[in-house]
Image 1: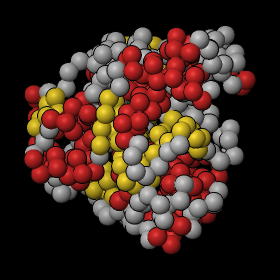
Image 2: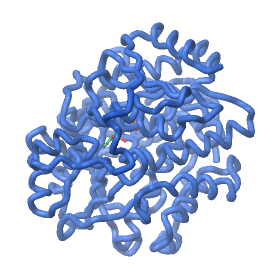
Image 3: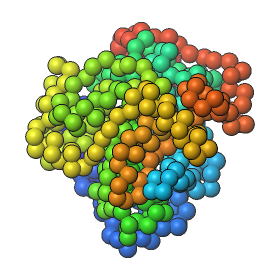
Amino acid sequence: MKYISTRGQAPVLSFEEAMLTGLARDGGLYVPETIPTCNGAEIAALGGLPYEEVAFRVMYPFVGESFSEADLRGAIGRAYEGFGHVARAPLAQLGPNHFLLELFHGPTLAFKDFAMQLIGQLFEMALTRRGERVTIVGATSGDTGSAAIEAFRGLDAVDVFILFPHGRVSEVQRRQMTTPSEANVHALALDGHFDDCQARVKDMFNDFGFRDSVGLAGVNSINWARVLAQVVYYFTAATALGAPHRPVSFTVPTGNFGDIFAGYIARSMGLPIEHLVIATNQNDILHRTLSTGGYVTSGVTPSISPSMDIQVSSNFERALFYAYDQEGAAVAQLMDELKGQGGFKVSQGALEVLRETFASGRASEEETSATIARVFAETGQIVCPHTAVGVKVAEEHLAGAPMITLATAHPAKFPDAVEAATGVRPPLPNRMADLYERPERVSRVANDLTAIEDLIRKGRAA
Ligand SMILES: Cc1ncc(COP(=O)(O)O)c(C=O)c1O
Ligand SMILES: N[C@@H](CCOP(=O)(O)O)C(=O)O
């Protein structure tokens, strides 16, 4: 299996190379040259299998020669053994035709653990056999950073630097990043918002001198391996509800477009998904783009679902690549317009493709809070604010196939918003009960590329 860039000008890479490379050298994102497909019998055979076995069967065709069958199985086994639920990603019923896919049973209580725990294992294997070390730099609006720190802390071959927007993540999210004591992990609080953090990470990848001198690697969803690991739970959830004989729909609380893009890949592989619904909070660029055809960035407005406070949605580039019939030059031009003018207009043909592929909706702050309260009153379940955005938008699309809304984080990560809506303060799991007492370690940084690069050069172990 080979990987090509969405902008068409970067070297073609293997799975392992694409994983270790992160952003393509032409600024684009890696995607598989072809998407492997499964037939109905193969999908039906996944029903009832352990999560780990489904993960292996779904991912192996994408991995090609990079990891042997035994190595991939071993990595998958180690990645998910610490999850707090035997099903890894269980379904809970919310209403007659509506289910929640609980993706928060991993070590940091958000869906990011599904991919991050696995790529932690894959990075370690690949770097050990290559005898290399890397510097991982990531941007987070709260959950990617804690998942990355958890997955890579203490590893000899990796230094990790996570940029998060100062004052714009929840206290639990911040403490998850600032309290680990291992010397190879570093939390950097940037004066700006998430889009600034992500832009600086991409600037570092495009600064080839810096990139090559520190061995830069990325674990944001620019990394194809992140997306691939997230494809798996679309299969486990759909087959649990009767796929391939019965199609299902998914609603995905969306920010950087990685999670819903994984759903797109699942559908492209043959999983019968009727509707794939983008749910945004008030930072609704994706919903506006689908509605109007104009991708126009505006400032990020802080919300009670902070992990989705994103206006430059990195993986939308991958969706555009397919909507533009895999024309790298067209994607590169749109991305130039985004950089130069802050937006672009999607062509009519590509917009039609996007609208056939995705539905969309948005939830205001009031609607999000009211949804948390209503779900609690009606079902006794407490959902996090990101999940609530998904639930609210999903309810506009309940006709037809069973709807599965992705429950992307544990409510205890956002206790203030949840308590305000329900009167209940959700407790952290016992293993994290002392989070508020642990000492914090964090560096405050300006939104300045040179200053950040200097800090990283000095903070690396080698
Ligand atoms: C809890 C939570 N929900 C939803 C999202 C949005 O996911 P994506 O960025 O893959 O669209 C994020 C951040 O990525 C998140 O942390
Ligand atoms: N919501 C994310 C933002 C980064 O997304 P990623 O999936 O590209 O890593 C976060 O919680 O950090």
